[in-house]
Length: 76
Image 1 (cartoon, rainbow, N blue to C red):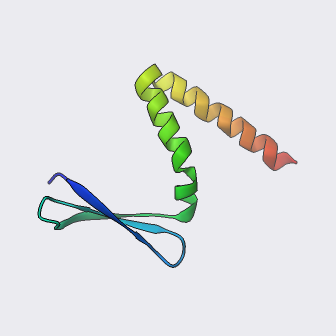
Image 2: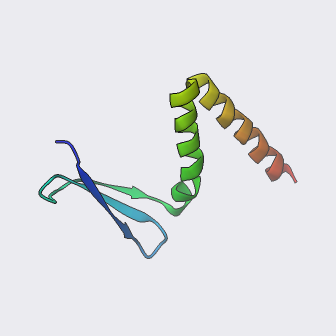
């Protein structure tokens, strides 16, 4: 089956439940995204577009540089 729609439900713990549905609004599958995962979504989206526009090596370099910056901030 192919999902043609989705719905979000914010949960009390900060996570979000995504319900994927078909044309008749029947649930096909669900996915739980934690609050931490939601915070990382902008980075994932940027890496995705880099991979599409400039190739996977550009996305990997971006993520590697980001990891280096995170490591430096944790050392302080």
